[in-house]
Length: 196
Image (tube, rainbow, N blue to C red):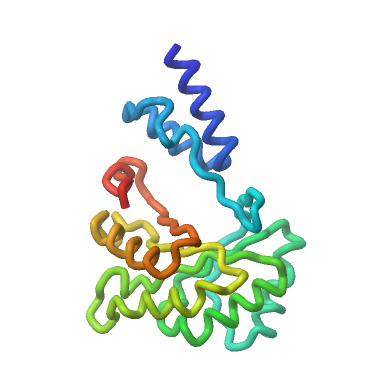
């Protein structure tokens, strides 16, 4: 019976969130979360009312003009991509260049997950939390925005689940519509961040 339930849960996760979800489902089984929990039927990401499975890669480039961004992203759709995870180099001056980069993505029919200013999330001196508000307000209405990438590997960055919860609430207070994601590097610490 347990094997049947386990296979059912794995099939459900793959159907709803793709092959990457198998590791999450397997983690749930290994730690003994009950089958039939909220994880058995996760919400499906939608764009324009239709299911959307992002296919793309990390991109750390920002563009000063929409024309430059449009040209840079022009080959992505023909390679089967529908999205970009914009990260790493957008912390220094995201407000000046992120909207034009999003314009270039939109011109190519791409959706973008934009990383929230990591230094502000980490509360580094000189990087106030207000930068997060400015960033979200500058892009929340952009048609290419898929969502926000809150943190990369928080357990390696020294960012606690409580800090992520606070930043999540801060973003959702400004934009209740777009999803927020976090990438974990270790399945063993997922439970520590589950509520974040």
